[in-house]
Image 1 (cartoon, helix red, strand yellow):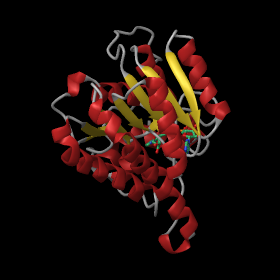
Image 2 (spheres, rainbow, N blue to C red):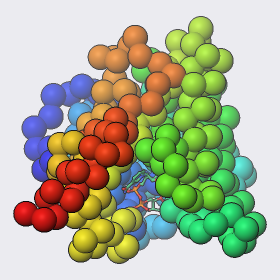
Image 3 (tube, helix red, strand yellow):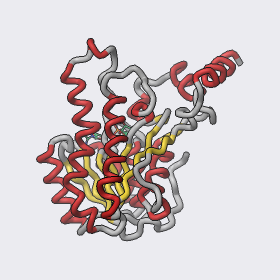
Image 4 (cartoon, helix red, strand yellow):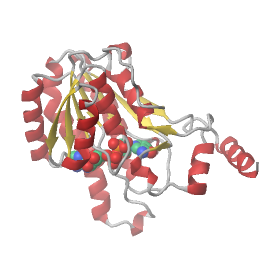
Length: 276
Ligand SMILES: NC(=O)c1ccc[n+]([C@@H]2O[C@H](COP(=O)([O-])OP(=O)(O)OC[C@H]3O[C@@H](n4cnc5c(N)ncnc54)[C@H](O)[C@@H]3O)[C@@H](O)[C@H]2O)c1
């Protein structure tokens, strides 16, 4: 979907942290889209990222909307960095209403016995560890906030096996932790939910999804179109805001139906359209 141009002040005055708010390469990834949409809707947004240049493009996009954002640089997978960045951000924000955990890396492909342990450890520490670190550091502030929502960006790879030793399992861990958080902190008024992106096109996947692979990936979805980062941001906005006040502990696939289509139906669509 196109970048939203009209905003409704749905997060006016809200204080938000988005992790992985930059994008690898040009274009718009989910972290950039979430931070920009939330800022467009009136939130004050702390942008967390490893890489200053990547996150500066998000800051510029938000500045173009007259939004309020500030950059915080560090490695969120490192507990000490996550602690420092959170303390700095909370001081600037003056509290916290929403935590959006978006950091994720795709690695660990191949049969388990061929994947170096270091790759598996890295994926777990980045995809799962950053969520743990951020929840630990922000929970007292979130408990005192008004919005009280955590939105984690998982993946359909955490729900359906793709033959990857580390990425899917790390996202499954995020999905389960989200349900645990919902139970642990429900009485504190905090809701925790996941968005599970499906076959979306972002700079992160552009490099290795091309040609026939891209056609098949799109055709498998019942609606037969490719999603993008703005589709994920819109779902994150719904899960962050008061409209979803009765929803917690859940994972919403935003995937054009990839997680509900049966293997044979998917096969028929892919082959029929390929033959046409
Ligand atoms: N693109 C897809 O098709 C797809 C599908 C399913 C799930 N996802 C998930 O969506 C998210 C992708 O987000 P994106 O499009 O914004 O990705 P991206 O790779 O473009 O951007 C991620 C940002 O996170 C930052 N980052 C990485 N490790 C970090 C760390 N340890 N500390 C601080 N910052 C760090 C990077 O510098 C980068 O700017 C990931 O969680 C990914 O697993 C994407």
